Image (cartoon, rainbow, N blue to C red):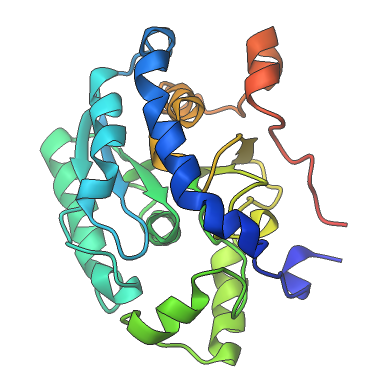
Length: 268
């Protein structure tokens, strides 16, 4: 039975209540991991666009963008204000698409997209439409295949989100969103202890150009977690035409830091 054919449930409320404290702990660990993160691969200078999660703005991705910049990339916030839902990117995603086109034209190179939570969903949808401008997509705890009421913040979105959906519309969207980009590599970073998005709804389906990387992290800490930073650096450093899945078996510490990678949690 595929994940799309069942209704996923929200994570346990206990995990949701622990989100803030765990995220603070993850952020506090960044200075301790600074020396180790210097060993993460450097990049080739191409443009990277980072999209924030629901109810957040570019301020929430400041530390992540600073790290990506330290690895030699031309990194940019999405500059669309607070992410209140799909409408923030434009009625048909045109505002976000314009950002990608602008960066592509300025650098004359494909742009990598990194999206946290809802930001990852929006980035991935843009990649489907713009394979000639997008190099790869990396999503962080993004609800890639969840139905109505499947996240612990669904009730908030229903009240303040900029694009209300009925349950039936949500199910149709889920099935559309779940399909990965055909011509752009897409990697999902996820955590089984995510307190906002059910982890099975945050993983990529098996395809030649998709991958999953499991980390120990909270949902709110995905953008300030040193292991997530290493995974992002590893992905971004891949040659434009040389994408390959993440290899957690490359070293003993990777096997400890990343519980799984690839499609080990396939469709039953």
